[in-house]
Length: 170
Image 1 (tube, rainbow, N blue to C red):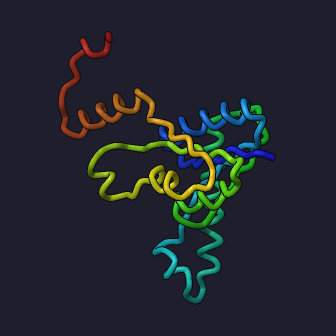
Image 2 (cartoon, rainbow, N blue to C red):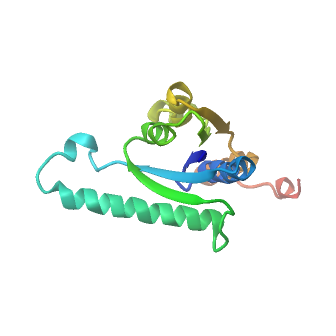
């Protein structure tokens, strides 16, 4: 069966990608696989010491719970209307998505994320990684236009810039 694979973190961009993935799964008659990537605290080297089994189990449990919260936020009580599988995968987000979408008939849906220069420098682009390494088609979903407005409001609050009431009427 064909699959549509999408990453989920709970950010507005990932929720937009998730809803687009649902639409693509409906059109294709495919199964929807929602992937949440997680890593152990301190990375892979920290996960090799003694007594880390409990830490890894706790991290995996937290990732599964976070995935449930994301799906609840995205869909609420109403199911998405397509066969759904939620998967918590240990690894970096790009590698986890590419490993999950391994079939040539799969579709990988990713959000393009923030285009802010500082964020690009601090965090590697998951969408670029997926475009370069995926063995299947990749659909990159741009951020919602409302995301830019939300970030603008956050910047105003951070810098304590007063809001002009005329901006609210447009």
